[in-house]
Amino acid sequence: MANIEPGGSCKKCKSTAVTCKYNFFEQGDLVIHSWEHKCLDCGHRSTTAYRSDDEDEPMPEDATICPYCSRSAE
Ligand SMILES: [Zn+2]
Ligand SMILES: [Zn+2]
Image (cartoon, rainbow, N blue to C red; front, side, top):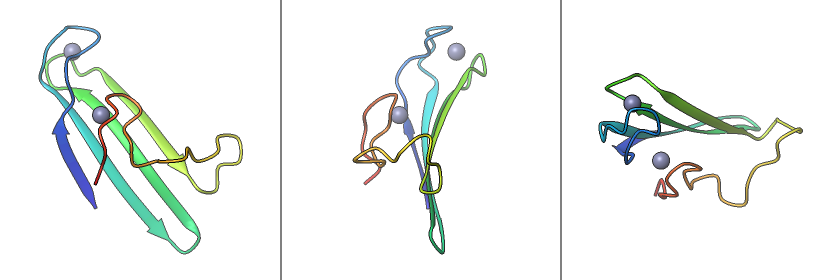
């Protein structure tokens, strides 16, 4: 499951050709929510992955909200 939406403007080059991509992965007990903002003009990328097996960084209350633009993956 992946979905892509416009992600607003680039912090680096101010282009509005930014995509916001959400990915969901589940296998057994492992659940991963990943978010990526990518600028198609300058290539600047921001990524965050929430993993159910990562004890250093606990899952946020709602991992289906983008940490960059706050959109919902639903
Ligand atoms: Zn850019
Ligand atoms: Zn986003």
